[in-house]
Length: 288
Image 1 (cartoon, rainbow, N blue to C red):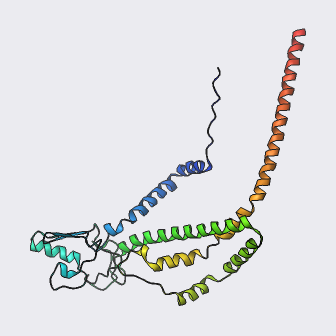
Image 2 (image 1 turned 90 degrees about the horizontal axis):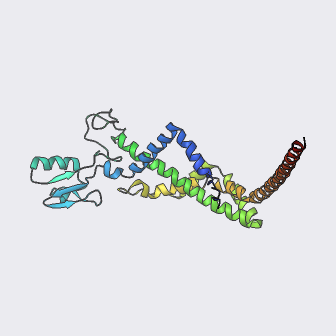
Image 3 (image 1 turned 120 degrees about the horizontal axis):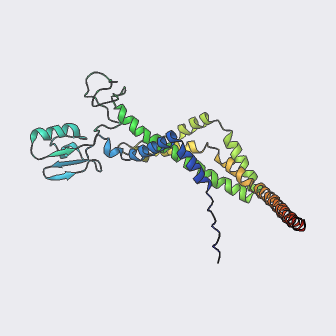
């Protein structure tokens, strides 16, 4: 009994591109570092913040990073939000068993450091390794949080625009007819609108809302910008063109299959002719 022929599994196009990308060492490792930094950036509220992670006061534990606590809860007679860096120094001097656990970098991106010497902006100096801006805000903290917001904003715009574009383009290409013509005209009219003037009109009608104390990714103004910018990405027309070319692609594939079939027939005919020529050669050699 002969062994069954081993059929090698074909490699997908994605795996080929991934293998080629891994050969580019600088590009591949840069992508890995960027991806790791982006993942870590979601932990920035616990790594870089002016709010304390844990506060122990009079035998009780408080978690200001998760819930707001007024200054009066830790210092009678005080009001407003507590300065946890100053509160930590006070607890150390009192030495009554109270303590404050701060993040690794106890400064936030929106805090104005008005207690520093001189007028802002301040030059880089420990602990502010990148200095402060003209409002006294820590530049390093703003860069770190801005990195997360910028990449997340770009990914949200991409996902939203491509998702809507694929859905609309697929519907227009699948149903065709009047829906296709009507949809294409709407897309052409929308694409011809000037971006700057449209944004000015929209901004005069819709007022962005900023909620203090809320993380940047949960601000309504961020999602408003995502929707507005994604609305001007022309993904619908590209996807619709791909869907419309499906019939042409099918006919081209059929013609290619016919050509391959003709080539295989010619190959089998040439193989039979070679075998016949070989038999005649052996017969001639046997006679002489």
